[in-house]
Length: 511
Image (cartoon, rainbow, N blue to C red; front, top):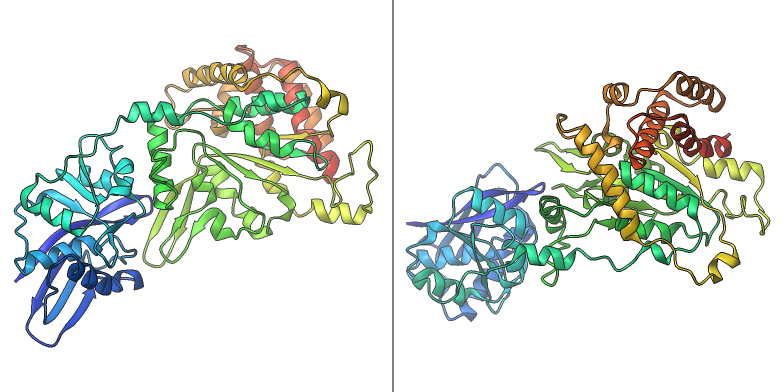
């Protein structure tokens, strides 16, 4: 005799169906779990045993076997505790669950029978709906997160007793309801604003262009010039997230265990700022069972790398693929997974080890060899993938003491939204193309045509600055964005000249 309970596990950022089959037979007391379980799944034996006893039920005697199907995919985590416990209670006729095949069960059990929150509630709920289940039973702390999925009955369970009562009668609790649109509006507010920034008008202009076209940007300047302050306010001028973008981003954060019960929806553009000691696996993602890294947690948002030359060389070089493709591909012997990673890279660095090479007040103490060694930590191919390079000078005291606030984020965002709408209209017949930074070489040739004066200007700049073919394309993309901000159909020479200016800084420093 056996019992079957439906559950789910995570593969990448998606859930997949797992059938938990429980069987008991006479013999010495033992408990075996098969189906490629990891250590956390195997340890469920002790959690389930004590949870069943402390809830007032009896743990079955004899040889108990738990099979997690499909058996050829490795299972991890503690979310199988609840379905295993329910399966044992059904198997021993301690509860009569007539609707067990209508619900998907997940949850980690405490020794007293209460349920702890799990990772990945949103993708698991999405899978439950796609598989045709009526509802899902999961820990109450994950109910808000799972209720984002419309058309699925979500039941937040406090303990094993409540789960068993519901499966027998169905009248003990009501489905958890959530007004997703109201929650989305409530959470879509930022706590910082560009009006806090005094001075740095050139840097603000470059940030506006970056936001309007989705361009990567690097800021070079002395300590205290406001690079980090500008970067933290950059998400506030990006177009507001759509509900679909919010749900997709929330799925990634849910898999990483970063969604809390108090904030079950990611409604603002993500801003991730990993420390420079981060490993390449922490940045890109990985592990024996791959999990998303910082670039995927920045999906639809901003990845800020402060003190860029201090990052490990390997960590920086693995950024090339996601910067180009918008996805991260992680291959293992048993599987190959893709994590989305469409983000805007904002980087900041000092011009030299001491930081005062370009400071007009403080004298630099570095010799040329030290400066060159410091700058050479960033490879040319990585710099070529950063569209805009700007110098952020030290702020003058007069600008700091000026009482007048800067331009607010809402005003800048309106211009950015208008420019993005022009791009959406331009690319309406292009699949997966939403902003200028995503244009391919063919698209650049089609949409970034220059006048004779413009051709002559960019040819001269390319020869004098020694720019690569990739840098040439990125200049055209940035100039296209500048023209969109001015609602101009054609790229004018002034637009092209400004775009070239944003590529000249790295060549003057890196020579």
